[in-house]
Length: 351
Image 1 (cartoon, helix red, strand yellow):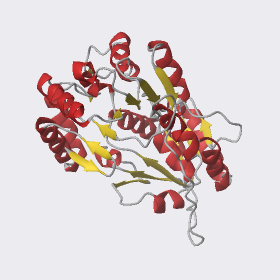
Image 2 (cartoon, helix red, strand yellow):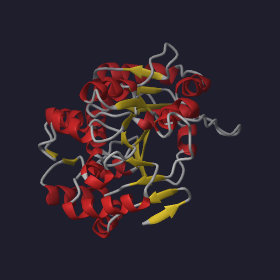
Image 3 (cartoon, one colour):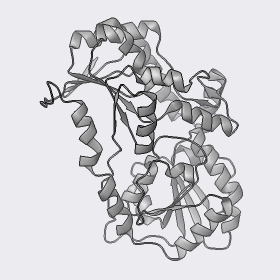
Image 4 (cartoon, helix red, strand yellow):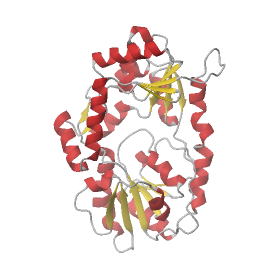
C-alpha cells in the first residue's frame, strides 16, 4: 500500500510480483517479449487476467479498512473485488477504456487467438454492473455500455488533448510520415498491412516513414524509406517535424489516443474507419478517412502535396477534448451527500 498525495495505491504482494514481471517484459526486445507472452498464454493477444481469490480478499480488506469516499478501478478485470461483502455500497467508478468483448470479436475476426476466451457481452455486463458509475472513453462506447448496464450511471471521460505547438524554429519535413505505437497486436497487424499493401503504392513520391515505439522494432525487414526509431523520451520533436500521421489500424476498440497526440501537435492523420471510431465528427476534423489500401495511398499523396494548416488540428482538440469536457463527468461521479462536492479520497485497485 502506498499513499500518493490524496490517493491511495493498493496492490497485493502477488500482484506486485506480476507487475514487476510485466515491467521486465517491456524492456526485452519486442519480438522476444511477444514470443514469451504467446508461449505463456497460448494466445496471440491477452486482454487481461482476473485476480486470484486470495488477491481479491486481500484488496477488499485493505479498501474496507481505508473507508475511502470513492474508488477508481481501471479495468473490468479488477472488478471481482467489488463483489466482496465488506465493499457493498462503495462508490466505485470503473474506467472503461475499452469494451473488451468487442475487441476480442474484432481480433478473432482478423484470425487471431485471444485470451480470456469466455469473455462474452453478458459476462462483461455483469463485471461492469458492479460499479456505481462507469467512465467510457468515447460516446459510441458510452451508448453501448448504457445498453449493457441500464441500472448504472455512465458518462464519457475522454483523454484531454492540450495543444502543443511547435517552436518557431522547427520546420516540418516534406513527405515525412509518422506512426506511434507499441508492439500490441492491433498496431502490428495494421502496420504489416500498411507496409505490404500501401507502402508500395507510395514509392517514387519522396515519402518517408518514421515508426516510433516498440511497433517498429518488432517488425522485420522494413523497406527502404521506413525507419524504426523505437522508444523516445519525447514525442514532440518527431511529431513537430512530420508532415502527416497515419493510423492504418484494421481492428480494435476504445479510443485511439495516438490520434489525439497527433492532432494536438498540429498533424492531420490518414485513418481507417476502425481507427476513427468514437471521435467527435466535425467538417474541420484533422482526420481523413480511407477505407482501402488504394484510397489510403491516394489520401497520403494528396495531403502531403497540400497539407492543412497545423491550427486546424489543434483547434479540433480545443473544441472537443479540453480539460473541462474531459473531467466533468468524473467530477460529478465523485460528488457525495446529495450532490455536495467533497474532495475525494481516491483509491486505485491494480490487482
